[in-house]
Image (cartoon, rainbow, N blue to C red; front, side, top):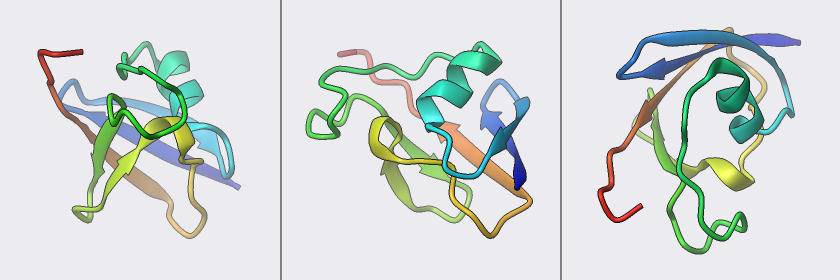
Length: 79
């Protein structure tokens, strides 16, 4: 199943497959999500979904059950 992923604040949209890594989707879209440990413990890749849920993009796949998913990127000057 294909889902449309929208990255804010730059309003970049790309199609992705359910189960695909959110970091891979962002990379393909030309969107930079900072990373550190790539295991979720450093929280460098923290993003917020359109429903307010905060996730770590490095360990989260594209979820099923939606046609469109909006991801709000944070700006953290330490990363």
